[in-house]
Structures are given as structure tokens and as C-alpha cells.
Image 1 (spheres, each protein chain N blue to C red):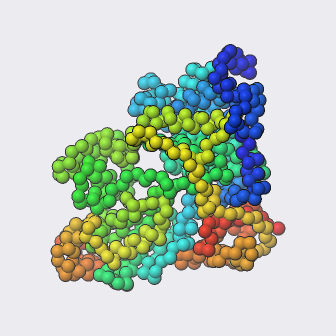
Image 2: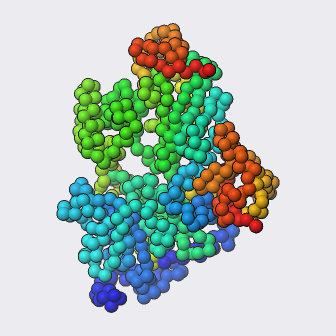
Image 3: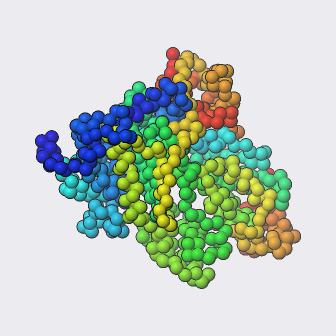
Length: 426
Length: 196
């Protein structure tokens, strides 16, 4: 296998890349091993995970393969739609309906000799910690906030203070029309995705009273159909925005509304766009952001130059504007913030005694804490009903409520962040 | 590969702000299934939100299942204004994308109010267009209570009630009173919301 791969590396194949790898430059990291050392790591040892094989993913896969990454894994749960073909250039009309991950992997392997791309057609949530631990780096080209929050929390969670290999740099790219961003997240070291959740653009929402009374735009009519009419007519039945029948129903209702108010412009595709919150994807924005992400991946994998610290944003609406800044860690971030302490207590200690202990300890100094584990509430101060429901736990032994080595999250009004306690029993 | 770990160590050694260990991080407990991870983060956020609720005596939360913090109801019993004497119920549903998405709030009774329609939809800016992840459940609840103290005719959801309120205030007040007793007004049967 090594020989076969070696044969692919014909004379001059990496001529341009090698200009960077053969000698240190003014900005190279101390650990940079010019020449064979770094080439060997990049081409023979490194393993990189690409999440998403869509607009950004296709660009990322092509860039990585061409810069010399040879062991690439790709995850995508989606299948190819005909509307993807204008920009997701690894797909052809014959591929419509097939898995994005599988088709993209095959395309790259056919086109770039010696590169192994391992696809997984499914959800990122299907994979466990073991799976994510095998990679050196993770690059995301995702379109959902939810999936980003998941992978971010997973990678932060993966960091084991005893194991340096458990820290996986996460490079996150995102685009929305002419805008985009690329960022480097070093889990537990730099600000994480959750830290910046409050700076996300929220999807455009119209005041519900405007929708109900004074529609002026075709979007108002579509929102009326989806927000007010759908639940009124269909009750609890959930709308499936991927089902053309549901979109047709919404379109018909919205068109009727538009006619009544003499509003023009309600179409089937606008209806679909509004309810799925589709922002037209721009191929060139994807190309720029993917290039930036892969550039960071290359620099981190090779130590050949300083990497992004830590947020690059691009606004291409009027001219081209870009800005790079350091997004700071949020001390009360629910994923990477908060303090943690280890505590060893007697098996016999009750929850009430533990709370007293926390209140008395000088280094913790907490007043009126609420306690919970990742799966259940132990004791909540408020609201009254939950206080009552959890009060019986006060007299139970902590060892009956929390497993040995388990985690307890403590929150209190006096703490600006949450405190997590790593419990063990003696 | 860049030596991130040594950076981390150097940073700690240099006595810089110690990289904080995450709440989620300690959860290396094997067996805690990964898909639940965001669920845990979410439940931490909601726990903080709930334990920090600072509600006046006019508002009470009720959890049908105390283990489920994501679905509950709120009862508002205004002690001033035209809705005094009523107990108004709202359902709260928090989805997994909270606090990026606002909680879904609906009135579970049929009430006569300019900003609440007969299906229970509520016109409150922070529940839709003005929601921000820095807001919390307390802000939403206080906002809801305010609607009962100061119904406003600028953002009507129940158009008839709003028109009545701005054109014929006495008539409006009497409709509020009778609707709260469970009257039928212009063909609409309202819920009796009087405090027992």
C-alpha cells in the first residue's frame, strides 16, 4: 500500500506545497520539522475529519486532497438534490438521490490518486467518543446551529487532562449568502462555538400581529399560513418542510391570503424558502471560506505558519470586507466555561450535608446552591414546585444519587458561572 | 502537528488564567451516551434559567413532570389592572435549540385580550422578532404579565378586542369582565378564568 501510494507521488507533484514545507520561514512554529518530518506527518500519519459534504464540504475535500492530506474521513447525512449541482461540484446529475458523503469520497479518490477518503452516510450523533478520538483535526462545513453545538460540545467534552491527544482542534466554516466566517476552536483553550451563540444572526421573524393583521409582503402571507393557519387547521400534526405536499398546502393558503390583500410575489419556491429559512448559497463565498478553513488545517497540521486566532469574518455584500479578531471565552459558557473541582466525600454523606459542605468551604463560598447531574435534578432551590419535588433527595445519600466519579453541576445566584464537581466516594 | 497541549501547559504554568474545565468535560463517565450531550448542556442552561426565576407572587410555574424541565405551564393572576381576579394559563415548550430559539409560549385558554388570539397565540415581541439568546425565561414571563397590566392596541392579534378597546373602552372593560366569567361574546365561548 505504501509503495502504491509512493508511486502516486510523482516527481514535482507537491512542488509548490514543498516550498513551504522544506524550510522554516519567519513565522514558523518552533516545533516545525522542515523537510521529511513534516511531509511524513501530513501525508502518512495525519487523519482529518470533514463534517458536511455540501457546499463547503465539496470545496474542503478538494482543497485538503490537493494540499496533501491523504487520510480523510467525511460525514454527511444528506442525499444529493438537483439544486445542489450548481456549486457542489463533486456531484453530477446521475448522482441525484445518492449519499453526498459516498459520492464525494469516490469522486475525490478517482480524481486525486493516493488519497483515501472514508465516507459515512449518517448523522454525527451516531458516532461515539472513540470515533472522534482517532482524528488529528476536525473541519466543519455545516448548515445547522444544532449540529455545530453538538460537535463543539462533544470535542470540548473529549478533552482529557491526562491525554494530550484528546484535544482536537476544530475548524468551523459557515456561509450565508455573501457572508461567511471561519474560526479555529481549540477546545477548552479558546472560545468555543457555544461562547459565541449570542452573536448569531437570528432568522428574520416578523411580528405576529403584522402577520395576523397588516400583511404587506409575500413573506407575511407565507408566515401567516405556516405560523397561524397550519396549527389551527392541523392541530398537533407537525409540518414537514421536506414534504412537497405540505409546502403545496402552505402555498395555496398563502396565495389565497395574498390575493385578499392584493400582495404579489407568493410562489411555491418562495414558500419553501421562507418556511425552510433558505438563504441562497453563493458558490464563491463557499470557495473563500473553505479555502480559509483548509489553510488553517494545513498550518495547524504542519506548524508551518501561525494559525488564525481565532475568528475570521467575511462580508461580501458591498465590495469585500473582512475582519479578524479574537473572540473571547465566555466565563459562564455552559459548554466550556465554569470552574471545576474534585471532591472526595464519604459514602454515607447525605445531599444536605454535601450542600452544607459546599456552603462552608472557603474556596467555593457559595450561597443557596442548586445541584443537578447531567441526567437529573438533585436539588433545585426554585421554582417552589421543583424545590418541593427535589427536597426528599436532601436526606438521601449522595452515593445513591450519583455514581462514583460522576459529575454534579452547581448553580447559584452568587456564582457568575456554573461549578462542576467531580465526585468520588471514600 | 502544532503542539497545542504544550501551549496549554505553558499557559497554565505561566499562571495565566487557567483554562477552565468545562461542565460537560468532566462527564467522561463512560456510558453517558453521546447524543445526550447537547441535552445535558441544554438542561444545564434551563436549570440555571429556572432556578434564577425571580417571580412575583402573581406568577406560578407548574411542571406536569418535575423531571422534564422543558415543558411546563405558567399561571398569571394579575393583582392590578382590568384582568385582576383571573388566572391565566400559558404553556411553555423549550426546544433543543434553546436559547438560540425562543421558548414556544401559548395561552391554553380562550381569553378576550387584544394581544392574544382565540387559538392562544401571543403577540409579544421577545417571543419572536426581538428574541435574543441573552434573554431568559424570566424576561418572557415578566413580558407576559405586562400584557395583562397594559394590553396594547398597536399590536393586535384579536382585532375585535383591540378595536373595542380603542373605540369604546367601557364596552371593552365589560367584555373583559364577562369573558373572564366564561361568557359567550359574539358567538365566541370564553373560558371561565376566575380564581376559585
